[in-house]
Structure formats: C-alpha cells, structure tokens
Amino acid sequence: MTPAILAWGACGRQRWLWMRPPPTSDPRSPEVSCQVKGNKRQNRYWDSHAMSNSATEIANLLYRYSELFDSGALKETAALFRQARIKVRYSDEPIDDAGLLEVWNTYVMIYPCGTPRTKHLVTNPIIEIDEEAGTATARSYYTVYQVTDDLPLQLIASGRYHDRFERADAGWHFVYRDYSLLDFTGDISAHLKVPLNIQAELQA
Image (cartoon, rainbow, N blue to C red):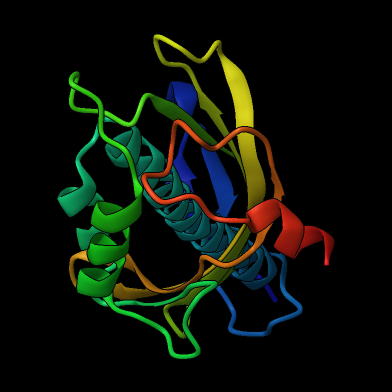
C-alpha cells in the first residue's frame, strides 16, 4: 500500500498527500529502464565522438603529407613516418623515414621557388578504426598535378596509399605505408631527376 501523510491545505482544510514510493532497483521499472537507456545513449555518444575525432586526426595526417611535400618540406614530410616502415617499388625490404628522405632527395626535382611545383590530391579515404586497440587503417587515392615554366598544368601520376596507424599519448601516427601502388603516369620528366621507365613497367 502506498503511504500517505496528513497535510493542511488552503483555508485550513485537511487533505491526504500520497507519497511516491522510493525508486526500485527492478530493471523492469520505468525509472531504472530510463536510466539504463540514458547511459547507453551517452556511451554511444562518447564512442561515436571519439571515433569522429580519430577519423579527423587520421585524415589530417593524409592531408598533412600532401601539404608538406608540395611545399618542398621533404624533411618534415619524411618525419611523419618516423615511427613507420614504408614499402617502395624498388626495394624488397621496407625502408624507414631516413631512407624515404634519401629517395626523395635522389629523385624529386625541386625548383628555384623551393617546391616541386606539384599538387598531391588525396581523396576517397576509407578509414577503419579500432578505438579499443588504438589501431587504424586507411586506403586512399592520390592524384598528382604539376605545372612548370615549360610544362602546362597537367596530371602526371595517380595511385593509391595503403596506410596503418597507431595511437600514442601524442595522438595518431603512421606505422606503415605501401608507397608502391602507382597505377597511372603521365609526363613525369619535370618531376623526377632520374628517368624511370615506370610506364613500361605498369604495362608489363
């Protein structure tokens, strides 16, 4: 039976006030059910919020690579892979950031403006994140445009990046990149110092 108390109302009239029963721990009760549902909604919110932040941070790493490379900051670009290993076309073993910088310094033409006169567009990123493990993968396309005093603006290369990432205290970072997935080339004579018969290899 629900308890009640006797109280004084308006004009001195007495009335009974029925007391609301205390909350129950029965999971079938409306109060507990609403609380459980609220907690689940809150957990889903924070999980999706964390994944959204991670996806943005990882996408920014992909875009930061293009920004640094196209500005001619090859040393800073290679530093993005300080904790990574990189698969390249002309080596059976993956290389580190120092090896990657050596490759760029050997092959990439830098113009008097201090840049390679390129624009790397990274598109279609498919980012898959395991928040609990602190790991992620990304597959993306890249398209490279170039223009020089002698070369009109044109597409010179297109391919794919397959990347792996891990999360540390400082945030997400590269741990692996497959740098060998070049699919198409145009006129790369104004981009590379050393001629490479890449097109013949792609058609082989």
